[in-house]
Image (spheres, one colour):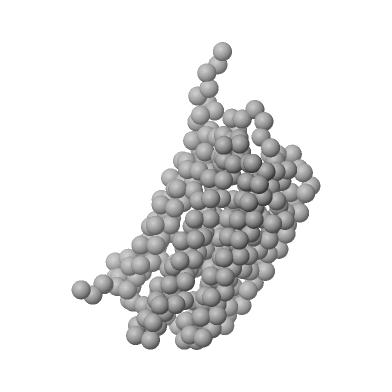
Length: 100
Length: 196
């Protein structure tokens, strides 16, 4: 918090409550979709999209990433590249299977 | 020696030091949980059969815990917002609520673990339970860590409000960043382990 910052906090609180309601609604949706027993690929895609939206809401508003300094964005961009590499490692192992 | 840039932003980074420090720590946490998520994908894709989480785990309890953790995130951000408008009484209420909600989360998790242990199911049962206990156990430890910090800022650490309110507000903000990250991890753990 910079002392010079002047922010309308009542507006902020309203945003936090709106995000909270959206997170609750998306939790209900993700659980409801799981009861449909979709094929696994479709289920994974839907679950990850919903989790992605929820995660973005938390990061953007609760963690204030929507109005953060450039250095933090660069740090997270670098982290994301390494995270993506981690997620792609299993794919590498798939292409490395010994074919009989 | 005075620690520099605890209140004002450092000119070259644009943020106070603790904020950059916590973000760097969270970046390392992304890699820690990322490695385990990657292992989970590798194990699941490579396994000849894999159970659906909802067949083995208690989805209603985990849904309740998701609601609890999301609620604790809003009480956390409200505790910081209360300090920003200089309302210390409300801060104590919101921070106390955050701590209690963390406790509720752990109690529910203990019931879940207890039910499995009661059936003789431990991490060694199979690969699914190994990754389930590892991921949720590590996440649970993070909740415990956050609760210790939150309890300190609710109790003895809050004395700083009367001597250095801006620095204390910044401390609560970075504790919040960590707490929201723990919430964020659960947002991905819940569908990955319980719903798929």
